[in-house]
Image (tube, rainbow, N blue to C red):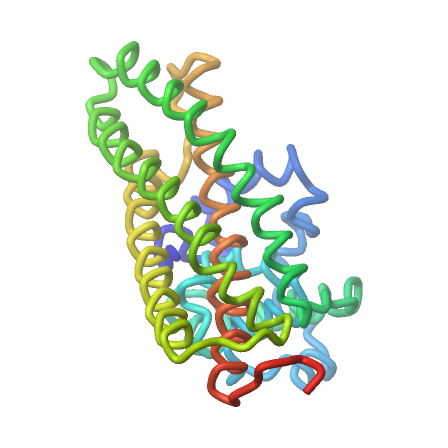
Length: 286
């Protein structure tokens, strides 16, 4: 979603921002700060041969989900911007294409096992159980924390008023979004995936709601970008209390989870559903 706030994977300011995150959760990132600083010394023929710079980044992330760790670290928009080629995405993010390809090649070597998302019902279950459930629990809890921090620290941090306003726009929109997906979008996709006949009205409606969901994702991205800017890239200020620090960390986690969430829908689930509709496929067994 955000293409400029983490603009250079070797930039000193970005490295200072990333260092505590990697130190806390090295397994999540899958690489070290040394990996990020390394330049052409480890660039190999395998990298140039296997990571096609013209392939869409959403497609790459779909085939090897661990690629998303590299995209996150580089500030590359792989969810809403998943249609962009790797070369274009790197250019937009202001990062070196060969460095990113090198990191992707390392991930490919270590984690070449891709998830098979051909079973759309399984993917829907994953989205609901992993991401929707997280949002149902986290959004209201985080709202209370945002309000508390804005009230206590607002005098010294006037940006918290805008942060609170942005979050209060974001949270109800996300709640309504996941409700609509579960009640209207996912049942039609599951019906299509089972091979049940869809009426012409259902086919038209599915195409319409997919467009609506993708538009919602763009609006969510804009609000998350604003929150990231208002927190200076999720930087904890020197005078922050534990509640303030927790708020910043949880907002950062919310954005990262949303990136993965939107990627699964925009670049996998909706693409497969559209393909079945366009091909006139009523059944995976037909």
